[in-house]
Picture 1 (tube, rainbow, N blue to C red):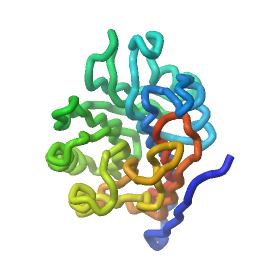
Picture 2: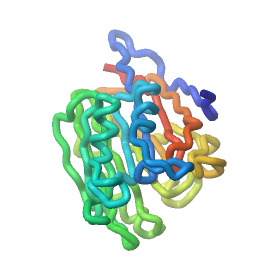
Picture 3: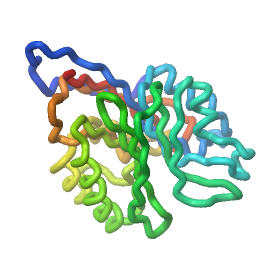
Length: 248
C-alpha cells in the first residue's frame, strides 16, 4: 500500500550520554468508523494502527453505544483488535449513547483527565493521558474561529503543568498559516508540513490534522521527527502518523 508525502527532519544534535527514545504516534479522525464506502468496520482502523506500530493514537469522532454503530463501544473495539488500552472522552449525548474523542495506547496511562473546551456548534474536549516519559493530549477543535482561538489559553495552561514532553494531536479544524495556527506555533512545534494533506480522504487538499509538541521541554530534547499520511480511506480523513525521537 502506497503512502502519501513523507517528511524527515533532524532538529537537534546528539547529546552526549543520552539515548533516544522512539515514539510512534497516530492522529486519526475516524468519522464514527465509517469509510468512504459508508461501511463501519473498526477492524480496519485497528489494522492501520498495527501496521504503523503506533504507541499512542489520538482518535476523533468516536461513537459509544449509539444507534448508528449498533450499540458498540467503538474505541474498545479498535483497542481490542489493535491490542491497545482505550481512554474515551465523551463530548455529547448522541443516538442513545455518546460521541467524542479518545486515546489508544500500548501501555496503560499513569493518569487521565478531561478538560472542556469552547464549542458553540457542539461541546469540545481535550483528553490528556500521562505516560512515564511523556504526555499526550487529544482534541477535536471547534469549527468556529473564535472558539479555536479561545481554546489556546486552556491548552497552554495544561501544557505548562508538565515537567515532561507534552504532545498534542487531533483534528484542529484549521490549516497552516491561519491566525490560530500562527498563535499556536508560538508555543508548539508542528511536525506535519502543510503539503501533508489529510482531508478529504478520497482527494486530500487541506491539512487540518496535526501532531505538535510543546516547545519548552524540561530535561528532554527532540532528536528527530518524521511524519507521513496513510492512503487509507476508512474515514473522511486520512490517518496522520509520526515517529519522533526524544532524548532520555
